[in-house]
Image 1 (cartoon, rainbow, N blue to C red):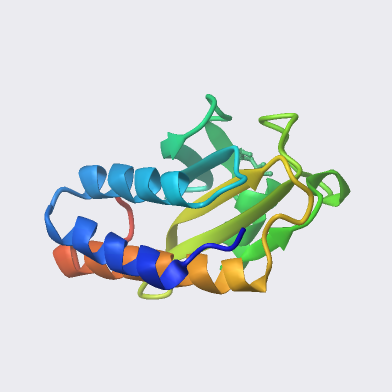
Image 2 (tube, rainbow, N blue to C red):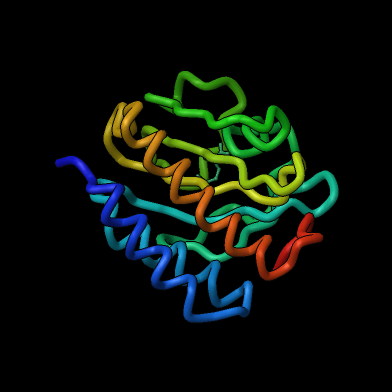
Length: 160
Ligand code: SME
């Protein structure tokens, strides 16, 4: 079951164009992706607050609220400012287990002016759920989202 990321990108652009409130845009960004990406258990944003990632808008079960920068998959992706795709989180040293059902994960840093201000985290109960095509697609969607946020607030480094 592959995702039509091109179509999803068009839907996202339309959804984001209607509103200017960053919190509302973030909530709908998460809602759309969660509805359209199959075989996932959790999808949400962690925002950077100093040395910590703090839970933001998400869909799924209640999750860990604070993740120290550099720890877990989310904290590592944020610190290294690069997307991490993990086929089996149990093999990832320092993985933070919020949900024991989560097996694979993709985390995409959200950057403005070279500074990571948040990450998008997607978890799946299936091993190796996220392939290269998913990475490219999700990165494009995140790019659109960040573009809209930074158009609305050019000095964006911390948000919500
Ligand atoms: N597994 C993540 C923690 C966040 S949750 O899964 C929602 C990690 O290792 O960063």
